[in-house]
Image (cartoon, rainbow, N blue to C red):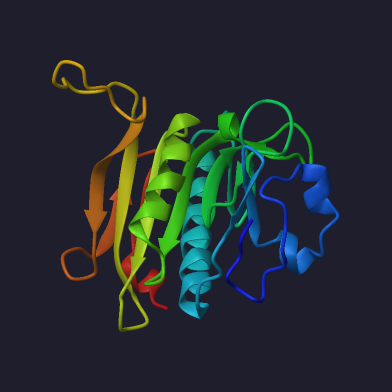
Amino acid sequence: MTNADPRRPDLPEYLTWEELEQLPEEVASCIELWEGRVVWARRGPGEHQEASNLLWSALRRDAKRAMDNEPDKCWRARTETNVFFGRHGKSDFVTPDFLIHRCLDKAYAHVRADDTLLVGEVLSPSNTAAEMEAKKARYAAAGIPWYWEVTLHPVRSEIAYVQAYGLASGTGALPAGVSPLHKANYLLVGTWSPADSTEITIDHPFPITIPWPELAL
């Protein structure tokens, strides 16, 4: 795999999870495996990490509140946690900035896509539309019901807006002979910015209300 970044070591184009574990932690933590293919995950600026942590904290609070109202339900909010695709193996995974998953049967278990209800990505100015669409398509193909994008302001240290997407497994009518590139995709169901709302509010996967002051960087 050709790598223009001198800080990244030369690696094969494909690795297994077991081979990834043999790499130094500072290298392995920057890599996702897409069906075994090495994909370098960008490390965003401080604002990126802060936004991720603030969203995680708010979602964690609302998850606990929802569980108090529905004792038979159990959810966990996490930040920068690997989500593994398929029921077995670990050589196909991505690492969203924040996520919500169902409670797992045992401590320290790996999070599978089937257990995941919401994944979120914080978009820094350096992120490209192509790479984010590719990652979003992987989440959709895995059947994760909810996807959030948090867009940072290009100049000021603040969140510009938050968008929530719901999974749509069907496709609309297309011209004869044309088929969709992906069998599942996300549709925008909510968008919020500090300029036009006082809070982020949505009822899925449980009631979520996040006042904008809680997301001040």
